[in-house]
Structure formats: C-alpha cells, structure tokens
Amino acid sequence: MALLITDECINCDICEPECPNDAIYMGAEIYEIDPNKCTECVGHFDEPQCQQVCPVSCIPFNPAWRESPEQLMAKYERLQAELPAAKA
Image (cartoon, rainbow, N blue to C red):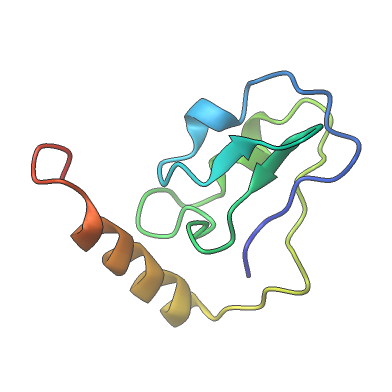
C-alpha cells in the first residue's frame, strides 16, 4: 500500500528530498504523496524513508491503497524504466 501524509504535517520539508521516487510534493496546504509513484521505498530501501525522517510521525500506510510486495516491486521496476537514461 502507498503511504499518505496526514493533517499533522508541519511542512518541515524533511520528507520530500528523501523520497527516491519523487512521490512527495507540496499540496495545497501540506505535503502529499502520489500513490502512483510511492513504492514504500521497495527496490531502494528496507523501510520507507519518509516515515524514518518525519519528526511528527504523520506518514502512515494508506489503507485505501493496498498493494502486495510484488505489486510494489512491479511499480518500482516500471518507474525505473521510465527514468531518463542519464538518471537511471
């Protein structure tokens, strides 16, 4: 499942640069996570990096966006294939 950022977000800017898939972006009021890009860091790290660095623990798993480890890995592979050659 993808992650989500709750209203407890304090806009500290710590999570955004930690996301290896560029899934975190500034929304209308707080940071948000694009579930189409969030792999929970599967393929990159053992644990979601945004959760690890969030000082207010406002990044839970999104129960509305359930994915198996296999689906997360497939998403990671798709995102990697879409990267420009210079970034890959």
